[in-house]
Length: 230
Image (cartoon, rainbow, N blue to C red):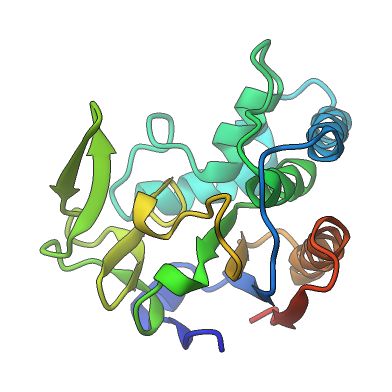
């Protein structure tokens, strides 16, 4: 069963046009990237290029909205880009998109193709309720630097995703912690797709439907439930 997922009133007040879709999936079979997921990522990069038509990712209205929100809670959006903008920038570079594992490749492809932040969490590693909140500043975010596990603390007022054990993603959708990331051993997942006005809510709904179809394609027999948009 998926954990309870809530968005705090403080976050709603900061971003009244925020909408999200949550996709719960069980019975997954993950593994190393395949030719199929690699082709999916290449296609996503092509769709992105057509969408932008020569513009930089941050010039897209949706990415501009995310930059404005990040600035509003004290982040520097040119330094700590939201996950969709960072992936889009990578997709358009000579380096191209990374190949990580099947499930991550699938949700990264959706993020790039639709220019919507998408995250994936291992449901078996989440502890208690999942909440999108403005941080107090004493919450723990366990990450890795120079090969060593370290504990960081978000800034007061920073928007974070967290569960009962601590912060799972900093600066809304900038950096996910390793504790809940999807690995090749993951069998259950919670995918989160996020959008802000002026992007129509129907756009995040379509992206969620496409993601659900791809999860089923690459992990036949998975039990998938789409929640939202909310």
